[in-house]
Image (cartoon, rainbow, N blue to C red):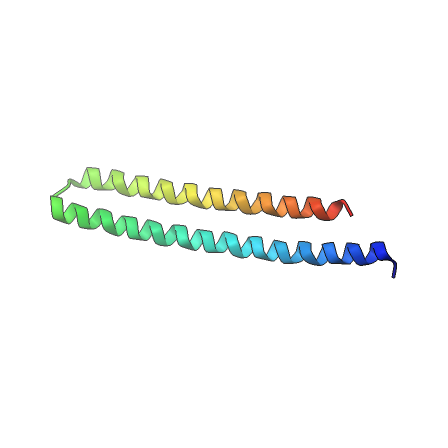
Length: 94
């Protein structure tokens, strides 16, 4: 096995490991975003109970929380995709 084959094997292994890590990071970010959304939704319920906030206002707040959760997930997926593309591009150069 030549030197270049060794280098290619290293990059291939690193690329596979990085791909797995980006998948795990995406899952963790999604879970964290879901938990934050659940907490915020619970906070809306508590505020509604304490203040007598109307259902319309509470529904708008819950919708805003849902939109923020979706945006967080989209951002995490975009970052993971960009990281995967960068690792793939680095391996292609060898």
